[in-house]
Length: 458
Image (cartoon, rainbow, N blue to C red; front, side, top):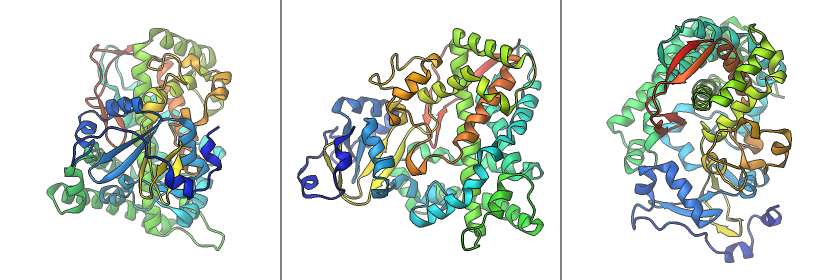
């Protein structure tokens, strides 16, 4: 139990408490140079200073949290004293996702969450299981025995098709292809957020700034046209957009076109890229671990006996689910979560001045040997009921946590398990190179140059 949970947010004792230790960094730039050389390695190295670490990025003071109790303090227990971090309020990010669930705050966020929640009811989401299986089956059927493929590219394409059907319905698939292409290009600037270039590109009309805003403008034209067409038709086509269009607040009001646009872009990003990355890393880890792969195929043979999976099979696909959980532990697409202190407070015995940027890193906490034996190893069997129940709540938080827990977490888990089961029942994927995959932490944790696999029919 964290003793700071019972402290008031702003007290005299909090003012007297010390600032946490941390790397000094460059006199002007702070830790920006070292962070940019290898951000994931830097985050892991900072654990040497303790569970709360202070780092300065130029003029911005940031705290890194490594203790699950402190992370829970920020994301859940005292969530009202923290807002989204400065990085999520940047010009680029706000221009892309607007004021959707990911970035909105306060009463407006609560209203949007309330309006969107019915679209993610488990019974509604389960109905999309057949869509996920159908598109996964089509994807696997196109692969030939012995051919080499980039599994990241294929999973991006597959999740794009699925999100198009479940979010927009299939009649706008060509537009969604264009949106997917644009969004992939928009991720590039986010790989260098802690740089002077990022700051300048966000604030000044540089060529990068203009390119970014022009690309988002192309997405806007497509999304607003789709929303306009749906408002005219005014009937439920069975997709998520229909649910959002029909949602009514207590006073009878609906989302405006601008609000719908922001939610659609947010859902498109979450349902496309992050889900594709969980699938990519799952295939990668299975290909590197033959015993886990053997257990995976054995479960599929026993549960499915050659047939296609269905959402009703999810309770029986327990080992497949453990694979997904372990993949998200080692390679969480959302590898960090950020907040900003609204008022001065205390975390872990240290003073937190207002406006301090607070970061918790799934990448680091989910590889902490205090909570995970063999933390760098891939071990789906670790996810027993007993292990999960005894694990500190925020030692594992791939979907974030607290009131802002990812609204699509059940949708994502169902999709990944069903896609793995559909493709894995007939195919085996093997790595074509022993080279270490280079990581690229941009908006999400990506393999920088894709992952090449060889296809084998089972």
